[in-house]
Image 1: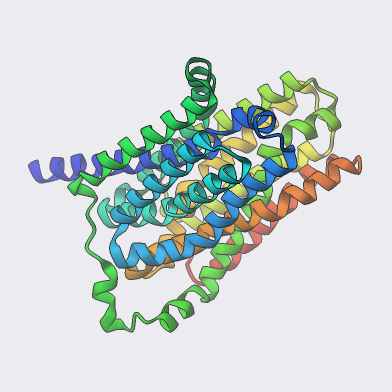
Image 2: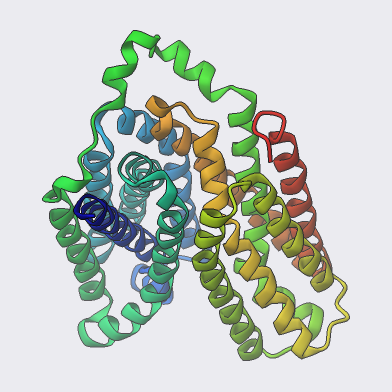
Length: 399
């Protein structure tokens, strides 16, 4: 009984620490967002210039996620996770201390490099340290932590910005990240045996690793994440503007519906962990969840929903898109060799950055052309592609 209790206690601590790290990574995503108008005036630049700086963050993160995964498999997840927190903290502080626009861009680049570490490190640690039967709830809490980080960032920006000014707020955010890095660095529970050391005898060469990343099942997972992000950009970033144009609602109403969508997604992530634990056919669970979300997104594209149904459709879509997260992450685990989880998770999750780079320009063009319906239609088609990809994955892993 004591062994079981110790195992549960250890798993809970690992899950909590990794989830806090994920919270901080998502906190860094948005912590500078409330100050973009101030940055524009402070440095005399355009919003387009600031958009370039933000884009640099995600481009750097996307390019470095796979190399970060290689480092995870070589050095262990804890070392890379702490490094990501330190870089994210330094990058955020650089923005707060920036004497010129060029330093702002540098800060976003450094923070983006830090962001590349989180998904491969987090997932490798959870897979290595948590009992397999608890991975569903583990991935669930990891996702909830990220969602709470997004929620915390604008609240922090408002409170700390009013008290300390934008520079003080961003420096404080960096200090919080460094404090978290110190705490996590001291945790022995996060130590991983370096799986790459065991894998040398199995031919863990660069060529073998590249062959692994080019495996059909891994490429399909990458494509799934890219398509999923194309849908998420529509339902998150562009949904307010789309609802205003397509449904004629006020901005406050559209923002409230987006909040309901995000809260639905957080609830879905939480519920999805227990679904993943109780129902082992993770492919089928993920296909079903994405398919339900797709139906509601296509309903949004009709432009014919009454206001209450508009809110319901957004919330339900958010719930099911969140609910598939834990099962989705277990699918990746099932197609990944133990010694290569860092690099595979890093490569697969970089698909999100590809989707984030492609979709905004397309959706912006739809809105500029007076075709807001195409934003939700595009999201629905992207989710349909996700269903096709997941079904194809069943060729390697029975749904």
